[in-house]
Length: 327
Image (cartoon, rainbow, N blue to C red):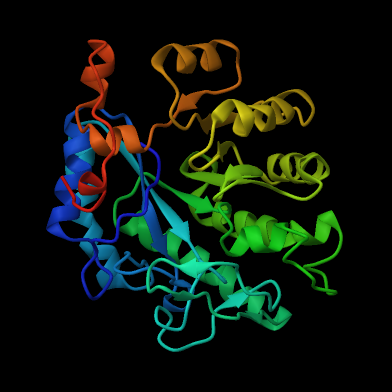
């Protein structure tokens, strides 16, 4: 089950009983691995209404019934750790100006409050260790909450992606300019979190080619991959999640995965797939591109997704009514 933002946490950004039932229902119906909705690593990194946080002991404790319930059915559950960066507004950060790699506002309107995205401020290099420590703290809290592991969300235009992207990152220090510099923060966070959780409990999500209203790709994406993927391998990462958001897998993620396998020589676990058919998923696994296939909206709309696939039964389509409730 792919990570999907839901927005049903309580006012303290804690996991609720309804969220527990939502996740455990999928586990009860034989989903083998659940990636949670994005969980904010620190309050100033928020950008959404009613999403969970993981920055204190109380928030970690609120997840324990969920991890226990999910694992009761033999399902593993990873916490996706998230910082929105410029995809935010002061309405969600306690009045603080959102941060990014550079002071460039995101285009469009924030659907969470129907306002323009805030103009972010560029993170000072002296603040970078605080961001790294926030990821490390959230990873530690996730393990105390009983999660099987964590996923670092480095995709979809959020904070770390804002460092990857040369069209946004206009820095002139060690975190901007060259490919190596734009990848530096991602590698520093990954190294630090690996030291806490180990390689079997860590995955990284990236989205070099994805749908964001239209197809959006990293600038010089193949040069980026040629540096980033071997670097992640060298520091000990062993699980990559290649996301294409709500895009055609074959037009976006599959060419990236092919590049990662054949040119970057990544020999470890790759997760991805978007909304593949069962036959397409089998083909990707047999071809050696994917090791695990994720589904998102299909599992959200069909808690009994696995049974429906096994029986070749029709899947319910995602609707606004389904999206707006937990079941």
